[in-house]
Image (cartoon, rainbow, N blue to C red; front, side, top):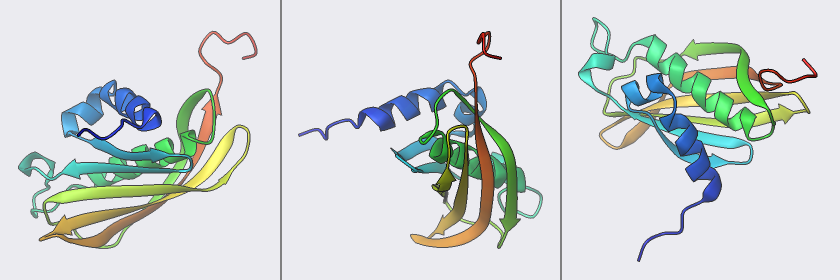
Length: 146
């Protein structure tokens, strides 16, 4: 028996599949619900830096995209990151990264969200980064109001 497909998750996965950089990295949207999102990324050798742990830019990408999905679930229009701050708490050494984001506050044109990025090693999750961002909705291109 197959599980029913969540339409919101399927729509979010379709958007992720249209992002060439996300496809290149191998990111997978595993949760997309009002006010929350989760993106998973298997760790490959190509994502590591010279010391053997995942490059900080990869962690920032995951946080940014998860924040945008979570915030965007509360907004309409073209969704972009307006601001983001990230703190790295430990080197990401393991098999999998998981970015979990949730909305802290949302208005009509912007939302504030936070994201924790975990590294999974031997089945155990450990926090490796924490981020917060402001997500903005802008009118579609060629919108007469703009």
